[in-house]
Length: 320
Ligand code: CUA
Image (cartoon, rainbow, N blue to C red; front, top):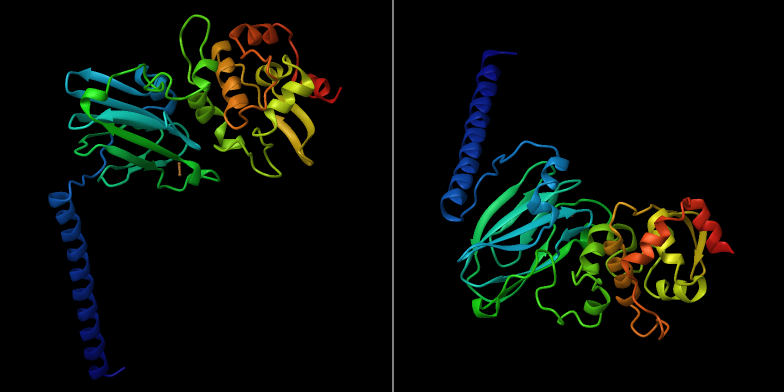
């Protein structure tokens, strides 16, 4: 290589160095511009804990909407594959809302349309931000980080209402009694407490059976169109067995075969199991239930727990 070639190469090198320097500077300036004018801020590690420790916090055990003080509202939400709990919340317009969010399993997103609220939710961390909605309306929430097969099902809403129409109900519960239609009655428990079967479904069942209750063909059987059939064919005491003990063994639903691997849900309380079962029976199949069917009560599940069965026993019971 002669001197002339050397100089030429050196010149090119200097040009590329200058170019990459300018590029770096441009990106730094873009970030600075966003931080200064668009209200963006760099996520800060607020906590360092295991997801279990965070989920054990009072606010996350019963996530929902709380009034912290007059003029200050908190929305607590747990994102897990593949739902937000709670999925639908109601807040007043013109009032500062503190979002207090976490993820239970994998990284999820939490983006509210038409606002600059856009979180990344990380298991073991709490994400928080204050935002005041200026206009009433329904704002959709989406998970914008790919989190698995049901990612596209991770949706929710924030309904912003005039302050006069807003009042705090229990955390995570439907905000207006009666607005939910028939299922509100079915979810009522004898002690007067109302558990929300829809939220329980969203938190526990939706990953396999899907929000529309249709399951995933070949993997998870549908509940829509099938759950009432089970009551008719297997009797009232069968569904509590599946809930408490799970189901292990091949089954057929609507002509399709499934390798039944329903896990047991004994960790839920009897009242929760009753609420979610009544939700499953009423959510998609209005009118399909026998007219004399009484909604499940916690005692139905307490009785099932007393039987000491296995998931294979439940499968055998089904085949009989
Ligand atoms: Cu959660 Cu995507």
